[in-house]
Length: 264
Image (cartoon, rainbow, N blue to C red; front, side):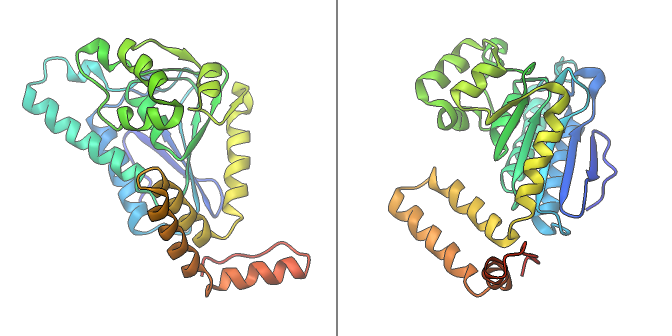
């Protein structure tokens, strides 16, 4: 995995936590074509080789916006074919994020509109600054959410609430996002990263193979019937029984010490 991206700041916080930051603050971290390419390439590389990382924290540069969504200045005057080619890249970027083997936690530091709100829905869960705002504004532009917004929002907050948000394009507050199920925790702006990283480090200290399989099983649970999901859970469970981490976890418990998980 390389870290030299045009539109992303990528930094290893410690041995196991990777910070990824949308890095176009001058345009409220709006997503241009290059940002789609960068996000796609980064998360595809993690799918191939985690390089010891166990958790990703995704945020935006600055205190104004997580991401304002698609860069409409770049899109102004695009032909239909160019628009669809760009959107194909955005689709790949969203799918690469969703397919990341390790947990991705969003730290929503400001406005998350359009594709930015969809990204907040595509991460595994997110914390938000109390000053953040959210909206799926695509309907006001003559389109609809196109990176899984219509799929993920009903799962987060129910069909009827999701329809109201998508049909109106009306912004809502971080407090509402928390009450409706999009956001797990509200933080004061100056403590958002500290609290998000605290949770990231807590996850990274757990057995990484177990976390990865728990992520897969929990994700599958929303896509299949319960009996099928349980079979997936059991398959994931049984794959962990023979791991060194499972034996280390039991030893550490009985020896009253912190386990040292190796991902083996």
